[in-house]
Image (cartoon, rainbow, N blue to C red; front, side, top):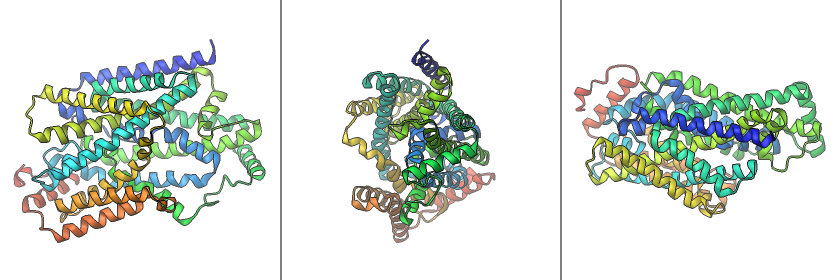
Length: 503
């Protein structure tokens, strides 16, 4: 059989496994809480691997290795910032968010948590947050579909629209029927596949070249010929550039598709095990991605390898080093990274549409009708995203680059303040959310973004405005403060005493 036939077999097997996992999740989904949050029964390992896989996307397997290959270790500062941000998120946000969302009227979405936490009678905070989630994740999902179509086009020679239909169709199928559990369980399989690929490719490449010493010699030879410094963390870097790269970690506090995993773990105490597993996975995969880029430089120098697009170095090495069937599984890892992010974003978008917008109209639905409405939300978001993706050069997709900073700036300060500051008011939260999003958007669309990543001013202004407006508006009432204390006790493993806070 030809190499492409072997690779096609691997991809087909992978897609069938994802559909099988989605069907298994479908059998476990009974009500809207199951569909949107998995019934709050995720183990720490499942939550951690799911959060990691839904976070990283194709950037980890193609973007980061490509950047290291082209420029050097100076590009690794983003990975450092993300790892620090993820650790802080698991340490300080996960246990309290798990406890508080349960105490605050069993909130199953981030917008509903803000609404219940601050007792907003007009639900303005929930509606605004729901709209932000829905809009930006529609663009995010569309971007993933474009990446999937391009992947099949470049790897198998398929038509772009055919590739888009395959990726979008399979991901939609297991998310539509399996809901949150379908997205989460497939994330675990995808995360393990990504981990295996990012360990195997650089290790086998180092062995093939004759050891780490030979790799260093190859990198130095390439640097001497090209005038680069691949092994330097500071070559060509500026202070604001390093700050901007590290600031990517701030975005974690406000990413709904990541922190929703914290809400779904079995108990606040499971966050510690989840942190160890999640950060362990992240460190190993990030190191694998960085090593892939560095080894790629040496491999190209020693073996005379021509790489037209730096972002394909991971795929190029896999196809050179492995049997076509194994190389196909490595290609599947890239596809897994794309699909895991799409599925997570679809389910959070659906929850925003159904739980935070439609149900705010006061509709009373049966359990079955709620689940069907959730599935309709997934389908609607997927269809709109696919229509946007039909034009692969659509300028609207440029907004995806803003989404990480936008979510981080709009939601990040609110999540932290909601969990750690009793004095936060609904007007402070609403003002801070709007201010953070606006500053990030305006800054990101100006020349200032060339010097400093927009999440830095966006996050800072959002935090400042939320604090100042809260101090200028009336204190929260006694019930809100009592609920805050109950959530804090539950996060520490103590009894929340719900009967004393009226829940």
